[in-house]
Image: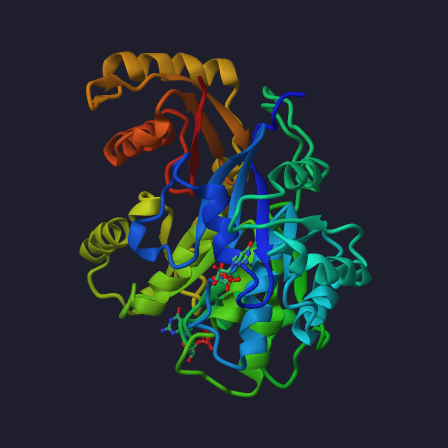
Length: 446
Ligand code: GDP
Ligand code: GDP
């Protein structure tokens, strides 16, 4: 069977000390380089690409928004776990067979069960007889037969491969250029710092009769999504609960709740980041923007309170320059001046939303992609490293939403970062993917 076009996303889950990092390092090694368009400085959670037999895997380590999410250890672990599980095709749930099951393990098991997503149970530290009792005990977790494993000694890799193989995502036909839009509804989240004008903007967009704020709130308390139409196109505004809750209790938190923003971002296809014209691109704005691109969603920046702007022409140029410099991973993203108060700029904002979603969903036919690829490589071939040439053979689009490409070649792990950027930028320009997150994986062939 041919390997899947897109990597299998695998989250490593488990309480501290069961061997998650050891497993991660064991699988990722240094074989394959993962490239994407985030600046290296923001890589605060570990993700790596690994080959296991014929499987190409993206491993997600569950160290992530730890610091940003205050609270108990349990709470932090839950947030990290949910985030990773949500993204992954399958979770590797590790237990320590030598230590046996602990209440925390059972807690994780319940949580994983509730997500309803596939789980492969791994009994780690199974080398030697000391792991036997824990191995048998773990059947009781209800995830079937555990994979007997030793991350430290590299035992059980074949069984792990077989267990993961059972969870391959459906293959997408390579030339599925006109993939049907899911249900045609554009899902949008509106995020930003407190007081940026999110509630005002949302109310203005959906119409005053459906106000989310104020004593006469016209929608039910529990509504978390609002459906409406923009010029005949169905639009769903997701996760309005967070917005309304805060507006209601007049609780303008100084600190942004990353958890809230993350939930909204995940539920959306396109995220509108609302910034205040007077103080745009502060640290929190950049954090949210970075989160949006890391989650692989399309980003539109609404520069709000434009009614107060005194030199609009100069200012928009300044903002454009700032945005591109501070968010190079989505350089050229839509940046739309608006006034939520007066309604100025809202048609342009919605146009930008539709446009950027189109790019985000784009599928480039393999033939077209490879014609471009051949020309690009001829124009500027990969450099030789240590006297040996790196050969890049072909490229395929593994997924859209966001656009994800896989390049196959020899010695790809030696490919310099500058060349990777050259490929990414080339892809962006050639296929009109400017301003959306683009993923690029390198895969070794012999
Ligand atoms: P994490 O907190 O889940 O990431 O766990 P680590 O990967 O840091 O491992 C915790 C401890 O368990 C370390 O001392 C590892 O060396 C050890 N360990 C990891 N895998 C194995 C294994 O397969 N067998 C044994 N005996 N120890 C292991
Ligand atoms: P949120 O915390 O992001 O939901 O922000 P709000 O929608 O509650 O707005 C915060 C404050 O900014 C309120 O006093 C709004 O009236 C004001 N505001 C919102 N949009 C605009 C705008 O376009 N222009 C001006 N001048 N003020 C605005």
